[in-house]
Amino acid sequence: MTSHVGRLYALALALLVFFLAWATFAARPWAGTAGASPQLRSLAAREQRLRRESIAVRRVVAQRWAVYRAQLRQRQALNAAAATAPAAAPPVRVVTLPPLTITRTS
Image 1 (cartoon, rainbow, N blue to C red):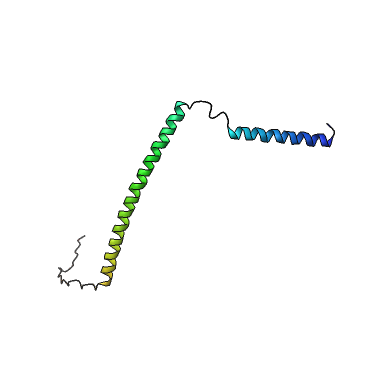
Image 2: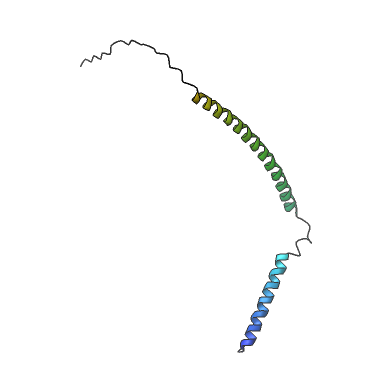
């Protein structure tokens, strides 16, 4: 094929065939015709079970965070109250210790 026009037509036809095949495969017209295999059904059931479990876990975590935040606010309020109150002087203890003597014999 020595004609440039012929080469362009062949390239255009090849691109057209490529994109038509791509669109056909992307649409997957054969996917709905076959029945679902047992593996796919069990996988879909497992996915649903995991979704339900994840929702339950999110609820538990949200509840625990709410309890934690409430306790944190309580602790912060207690700490703030303790910081503003005057500190009581610690009691003074007088301790007498025996003299420290170390004797070593060689």
